Length: 436
Image (cartoon, rainbow, N blue to C red; front, side, top):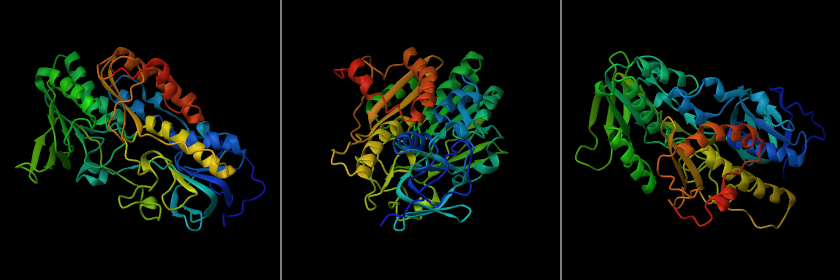
């Protein structure tokens, strides 16, 4: 039987609470893009005090803009707002981290040891950056020419360190683990190349992209496009190279060669002047240790309905989920529509057909100032799902403008408020025949 809920709870969503009420109709773990998209709609539908958001951070970051910050094209101030300003006004914000989930008991244990009960649980916790997963990286990051656009702590170092480069190797890495925004590791390489050319030093700097994967991009159409871009910019693409160690003082990066080739298992050490690291990533421990997790540690949900495979009152979306598609904000937007529909139908006992998520995701691949390849596809089928009538595998100024200027406004003003569910409706008008 689901936990009983208290009759009254005050709604002070914009003021953080660390001492949570004992029970809620819905508990959402995570105040990122997916968690807020879901909690905004659900709290409006169910009323004040019925939905709680467990989120320890006090600032919310619009992470897709980090690439632009690292490339010197946007200000860091454009990327963040106080968490209190984006938490839904009818939801209660529990300003703590989740430490344990017991889906059999319908409870979440917080970092301070207190327990919150739920009728329904939505897990939107994101994915954890694992800088400790590369030997020497924690000691080197933020100095020694080592930066990362994946962390608000280090993203501003990227442009700072790039400006200091005069010659030598500029290295850009992609790990073997699942990551969020899998295009970001190479995007910054293109922006760095453009910066070096503008400074007239490109002939003195070798730009090298090292990926642990066997392709530059998962979808063939866009892989062909990005290989062509890299070739035209004289950027070396090194496949099956996984960063395993960084020696900051010596400015050396060591890669393990993966795959089944003749050099598989060998290590190669490369000197660098600049190193942009995409850290390995992993599921949060509180998920991995729980009965919610699959063998890989992600929340085990049906890939179409987003409902948990064992616990029918649990759903998940975004980076923490087992959904076999690229982990992006665009994917979370499309997933949020499906999740909200299916969860609300379950709460109401409605027999309406479940919505199904088709794996849609998008990765805007910035290739320079005012140039961008707008990859849109299903991670389930590998089929492009382009919104516009033109070939989005080509570099376009329109795609850049859309990503750099329009989508951030959509993010803050619509997605976080639960009213942006992805471009499917626009696609019906802008590309009705899926001509490309």
